[in-house]
Image (cartoon, rainbow, N blue to C red; front, side, top):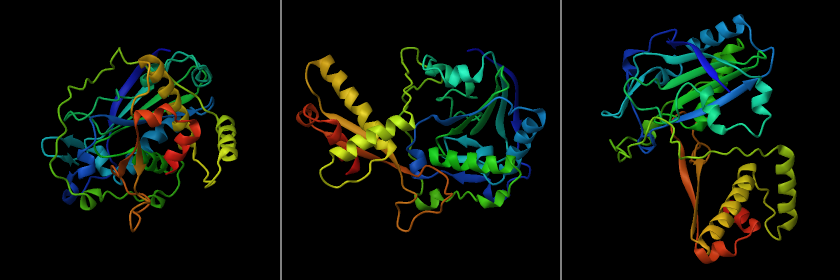
Length: 319
């Protein structure tokens, strides 16, 4: 798959950010996040593209940026703040030399190639000139479309990315943008401490020694796996989520490979990021933006991991 960038521009908010919102101090949870971007790629089938739709994507992006004003600014890492002076979001258009179905239906596609559908490398973040929000519109030969969205992890998590995408979707459909009111109050809940992560000399380019693999778990496979777990459970009968099922399956495979490689079982540590928005007392507003997640960690000794079965992993995730 070859992706050719055809245009690159900045989309600015349709109205300026008020002066009292110019400096946005990031929260302590923001400070703890690594230099990277949170990304998503949305695929649309043949027939979705026309010039009117494409133009409206730009217009609707400009329309909602005032509501997501930090995303149009730039991060000043020395001061741990966002300069919200409306520099704009990066907007990229590109052409892809294949059919969309060749990409989404093939298990042979190298996952690294999917990065070409994103406007930035995952680790291209935190430079003073880096846009905090970037969009790439990739057009396929079949008239299919991929929309790559990239947001700096310094001020947003995956849930915040989903809130932005939902708001942009509503605006592009001509729906009332007031239905989603993003709230950027995490610095008041978790005040910043001017904490800086150690410099890990993280590259802004892909490391060629890293290997990526894509595993597809469809809803039928997950449903079948859940049924087996529920039948095997002797107590509790708690219904495991999709994340718990797939995580347990992947961990079990990794433990098996590691045991074969080293000739023995080793201690195991598993971590997940947990969204705290609905877990605080009282719960945070639905459209709270920022990094509002904490690590949930499961530890196992070498002895425990040696005898651990799939059902045991499910139980450890359920708690």
